[in-house]
Image (tube, rainbow, N blue to C red; front, side, top):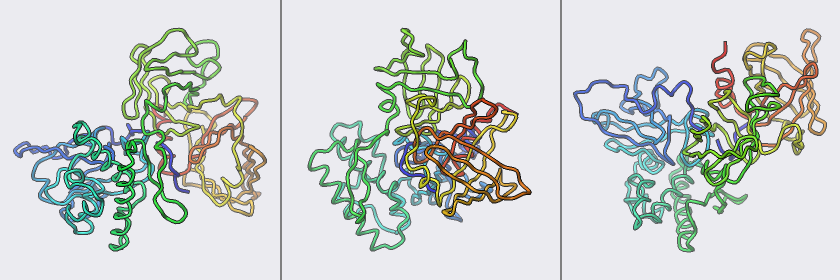
Length: 445
């Protein structure tokens, strides 16, 4: 099951110590700055394509990892060869979106370039010049050969830079960089250039536009939702439930296990208090120094978010309490013929484990726990309830789950054990489930 279009933040896990670092410590060469971007691409691996067109597993051709602004300082000698930017699902992030990358992909740039973008990728993989690509896309060369986001700061260039930015994120979102048929690529890019040119002629606010395709594969315009964390939270009230600890009900911020935060005009209040604290939202991080909060968003959609906090670790964030939430629409069809990764606490409540459920249309499923044991079972969905049992006398397995909030990629679930609610997550891809598991288990043994 693939992630649908939702919003996902910066990973601070295994790559954090490399962010923005140059792995070549030879200081005898002049330094240069490389930028990887669709939006600015943080925690992206930058590699040399001297001998291969991929980042080697042994990292032998790795130059470093970009910082949160998509930048990496490295030796000028690195520019002798083409460059690779590797964006990894669940680890890298894009400043155009809240949260971690929703898919893995690779960008390229020709030798001598300090910018790695969807435009340089098409030029490199198809051996075409910038002038030809600019003609296809109906845009001036300078806006697709440099940092188009930075060009927005120039009033004279702002609107054309918005146009280039929209083209870049559309090429990335619709995977046009992966098209191997040259004539089809040319046709698609010319059609895209014509479509965006039309939006510009009508005066659309291009930074607020997302382009998708309809059923006949024509380009269509949609509103770009959740492309800013500030816009996502402002004017809204959220309920945080920590997935790391059981909180006392009579003290601390998490009363009855839940913490309420309301965001209004760059200020927030906690649990309905009259005290207001200023906050800033940058990229995927919210900071409120007055109350000591630093929240990093790893996923955000209309209904649910996953946030690494400075308080108690990993929070499940919703706009309604799980105790009063409704149900999931068409749970049966959401599960059938799909695989979901169930992230839940172990029996000791110390660490979270991942169980893979592969649901089949005949109400059977395959159950695989932590890549170890695998066995067959039965499943039945009734309303917002799911019951899973083993169909083997050798394995005693039974699980009853309640689904409370609907989403395409992250489904919060409740498992009642001995009268106590345990909270878990159904996640659509293994890569993202593994990253969330690390956050859930952070600091535990």
